[in-house]
Length: 327
Figure (tube, helix red, strand yellow):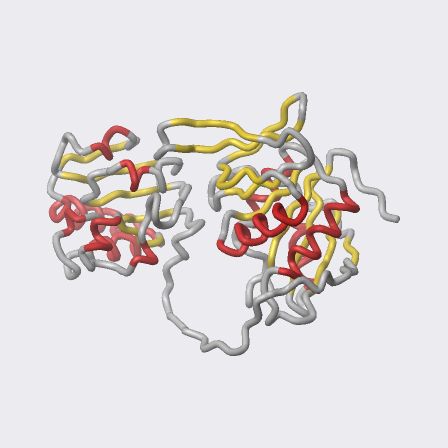
């Protein structure tokens, strides 16, 4: 039987359709290395495990367990089966999973099966005398709190983009992980149609740079100014709920309590007043820049840099200055 280090942190990562690890993987391994020894459980599509294991080792995994799902059409249960088997053998001090749609589903299913405690949407992890602790930004960012479990290893879902630390690359040490199927009921994909959207912009969730627009843009046509600045910076496009409700942009781009939570390196808010629901989804960003004509807008309370002015005058000048620096 393989022996695992006593301070093992089990990091669960999935492969994307391209075969590469999910974008949140570097941050997960970085967080794990800060509190223990990263052990990877790679949930891979058939044939993708070997390349994914090499990538995981490069990101800091000391050992890599490869669990290839022979039936990709089956949802949820195969991942839980693999995680339950890995946790039993590794006996980790904590289990780290991305706070993505799939990650949240996996964490909840595993916790229900194993009676484990879940610390959801963590923006950091640390270790004290009793074990691994998760850090959270809650109530719209008004408070920073910590959580952990009173027994067993905590299952921690980590907000994408919130962890800057990166682990040191390790030599590849991997093994195929044989999983006994639980035969529990599982949903299944019978058919699907692929929707291809061509864009050079990064995905909003987990993006390093985000430009977001609010009601102050005034119309769907004028919201194009947000997209122009985002394209100049190579940033993702976001929006406040007010902009989404006004029909300026689809709901999938909404940032906030009822939308996507981001922890980007740079967050630029254009015409966003900064209601607490919006701030809840973005104020853990490392650098916040706000442009708004209302000097009393709440967004300025959390902004690192604020510009009080007409965004329709300020932003075109900013775009011109940025483009000039590229030449």
